[in-house]
Amino acid sequence: MNDPTQRLAKRLATELGCSRRDAELYIAGGWVRVDGALVEEPMARVHAAQAVALDAKARCEPLPPVTVVWHKPAGEALPDVPLLPDDLAAAWFDAGRRSPADRSGVRGLKVHRHRLFALAPLDAQASGLQAFTQNPGVQRRVDDRATPLEHEWLVQVQDDAALDAPERRAAVLQSLTQPLFFEGQRLPDARASWQSERRLRLAIKGSLPGQVAFLAERAGLQLAALRRQRLGRIGLDGLQAGQWRYLGALERF
Image 1 (cartoon, helix red, strand yellow):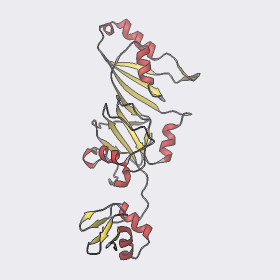
Image 2 (tube, rainbow, N blue to C red):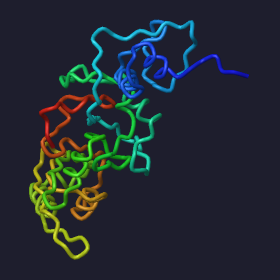
Image 3 (tube, rainbow, N blue to C red):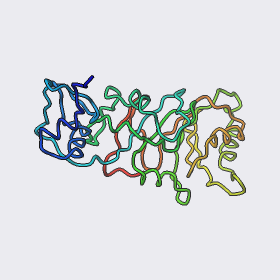
Image 4 (cartoon, helix red, strand yellow):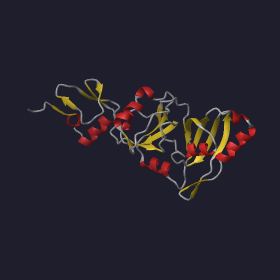
């Protein structure tokens, strides 16, 4: 039995007299509507009777890769795969959770939730700044061990009466900033300070999985909560837990 539908990209290319590739760029770019509804999948099937319209402001150009900054809630686990699954990206980065403070000017598109690589993944129990990128250059910068980025952490510790003593608080800072070795190499020293009676700030250039928890345990502390506040030059900037935004064109890690 013949299929009465055809691919949207083929239909658009025929109507516009353009190449199939240009039609796909229009569709993925969010410029095409079918019967008034936005359709962003070039493979979508349409009937001959359906109206296909191209936005008057449409631009036929390749879409630049994006980087997404997210305030990961504590307890949300990242999948143990290099690329974030599309369905999970759609759930985490839906339009309703985009920060009102996003000043990137980037139009939200479905293609932005495809092939996102997790940068310096956070453990499930940690919260705070988690970034994903489609840009290989951004990925290389964050992963560069020769010039590691600084991670800023806010560490909430469990209540302990011993921490009321100035000597104990000073000993904690001394322990946190002592040298740490991994596979025979010295890791960059941490900078530590008390932010309140039970909250510490740690700044470390580079960060191995579990490093902050190890430092806390070595100092005799029990973690109550752990949040990454900053990665390189990019911070949470008022993002509420679960909110996300695009990285602006002029922002750099």
